[in-house]
Image 1 (cartoon, helix red, strand yellow):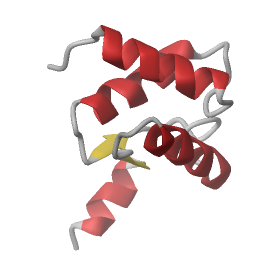
Image 2 (cartoon, rainbow, N blue to C red; image 1 turned 90 degrees about the vertical axis):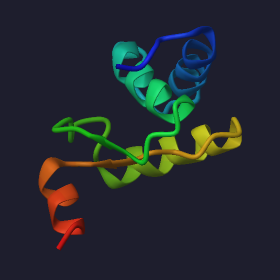
Image 3 (cartoon, helix red, strand yellow; image 1 turned 135 degrees about the vertical axis):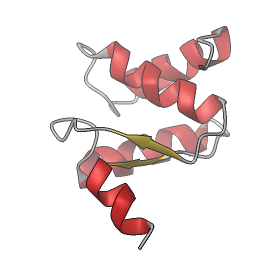
Length: 85
């Protein structure tokens, strides 16, 4: 279990204000931020609408990296399983 600390909340705000995630879905930005702040390699999601699509991934990665973190790979469960083959 990962903590939601001030560092993660600040990064989540940057993701939202930088148009990485729509402002009406701050919980999704927080999921990404918590994963990034804690050094997770991947964040598995079924959310293709505004997280796991090429444009969103590009925007999110740019924002997270500009804030000084490594961005976790955003992928579906199938994509993660395919990577292990």
